[in-house]
Structures are given as structure tokens and as C-alpha cells.
Length: 276
Image (cartoon, rainbow, N blue to C red; front, side, top):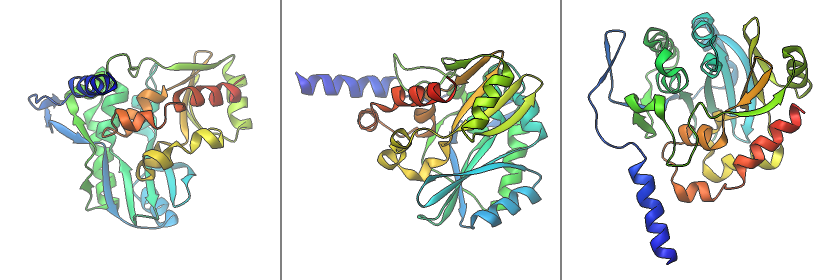
């Protein structure tokens, strides 16, 4: 019976993984690759050099964070990224992420085309995303596609499998005035980006135990940490772990999730404690 259940679970994962082929998507009159890599990798540089290259390419450095012993997340943005994301429930697209990976001797960059389409959905602006990517390519290129890929047309409606959350299914981890919620984020030493008069994106460190999940599923994509929280309209909203981890690790299977089965609840609990 256990074997049958396991095979059924695998079948569900295949059915809902979105592997079927579709025609290339047209965005703003431009054909976008049918399958898009979640990440691009480039030649290794140290953190300070990476920050300098980003600044020279016109990006603002939002902050840095150590998600793993041998890697550093660099968070960056610019005016166009913030403008596109300054809409209800779209703020997660405002900041790009890259990992200076000291272990694998590479820079590992979250592809702005992949993540912007997932986060902005029908408000996706290909001109901004492709311009962001071009600037990153000039600064850190040549860049290579990662093996982590997904169909572009299905990113806006991404979920891991049946019963798992979509982008829109965010967890409300705190309520109150914007000033009060920002105060709690600052007290937790969060990295904060202002998007509009009443809209902010904060990056919050999870508790140590929960944070360690990247060691189990791969520190090569550890730039998904620190955890993003959108503050707007009197709420602090976080991407559900089942969504944020799955879209950041698109090759992760059911077995991988089984190894971190306590993490989704742990993430919400940690963030709720921050914004209590």
C-alpha cells in the first residue's frame, strides 16, 4: 500500500508540474523563450566587486545577507523595478536577488524575467524585465542558464501541485498601521525598501532552526533568503513557503519537500513572532 501511495504522489507531481509544451509567449510584441531558466550563473567575483558592478550598472544595493556559511545574498533594485511593483500585491517583484557563492565559485542570479512574470502575472512588463536582465548580463556576463527551468506561460499560475498555494495565497503575518509594522520590521533588523506612500517590502531573517532548511535542499539557491514580507494596507504579507521554496527550487520533488515538511509552519510562526 505504501508503495502504491508513493507512486500516486509521484504521478500527481508529474501531472501538475507543467511539463507540456506550449507556443512561445508574446510580451510587448516580443517573443519570449518557451522555457525560462530560474537562474543565470556567471564567473565568480567577491561581494564587494559584485556590489560595485551592480552599482555601475545602475542598480541600488538594498542590502546583503548571509543565508549560508559559504554564500552571500545581494539584494538590488532600481526605479523601473520599483515602479512596476508598486501595485497591490505585486511588491515582491521590486527587488532582485543574487548569490555570491564562495563554495561553487560563481555568481548565481535570480532571472528577472522568470521571477517578474511569476510575481507580476498579468501586469508583467517585459520591457523592464528584459532591460534588467540585459544590464545584469553586461555586468556579470557571459551568463549561463541554470538547469532550473519552467514554462514562461505557466509562471503566472504557478503552484507546486494540487492543494499547494499559488502566489496570491499569501500568509498574513501581522496587522496594524504601516508605521507600526515597519517599526517591528526595523526592530528585527529587516532590510526595508519603500515602494510607495503606503507600500514597503521588507526582508526578514527567520529563526535559526527554520533558516537551516537550505542546507537540506541546496545552498546553491540560498538567495531566496532572507524571507520577503510585503507591508501594505495595514497588513504584513509573506509568500507561503510551499510557493516561495517551490518556485525558487523548481527541480525540487516531493521527496525534497518531505525532508523539510516542518518548514512552512516554521516560516509563518517565525514571521508572526516578528510582527506580533
